Amino acid sequence: MGEVPDAPDDRDGADPTDGPAPAHGGIVDTGLQHERTALAWDRTALALLVVGALTLRNVGAPFDSVRHAPGYLTLVVGMGLLWAAGRRYRGRQADLRAGDSSVHPRLVVVTGVTTVIVSLVALVTILVG
Image 1 (cartoon, helix red, strand yellow):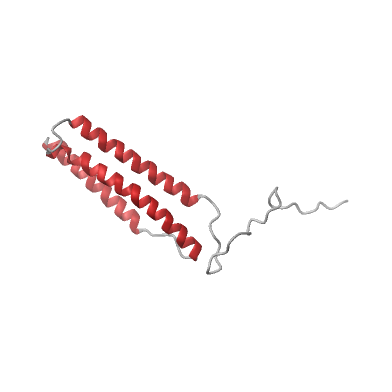
Image 2 (cartoon, rainbow, N blue to C red):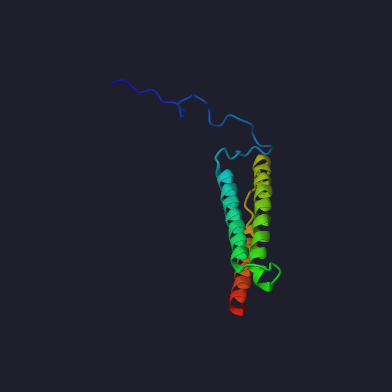
């Protein structure tokens, strides 16, 4: 019987390991994991901005009362998250190119604490207002 020749891994014949190598000889992440994560953080930040704006709108004028605190806090957190997502994406790409770890669990703690603070401020506002 005839033997079947080995098929190439890619249809276009390109070697998936081609490309710039990181400084420490590790493998550069060729997938889109960091891009998807950055987009998810951007969507979360946009949702926070919308929720903050709607909270301010629903509470109504004047916009300087304590009842507006959750709305303003949510807007500030949303803007900060949008800024941090872009900064984090660029930092993780630099880490990967340098061969360093891109895992930083401190961000999970910061996100959790911020969520709890926003929730507590909203709860206090509901109970007091």
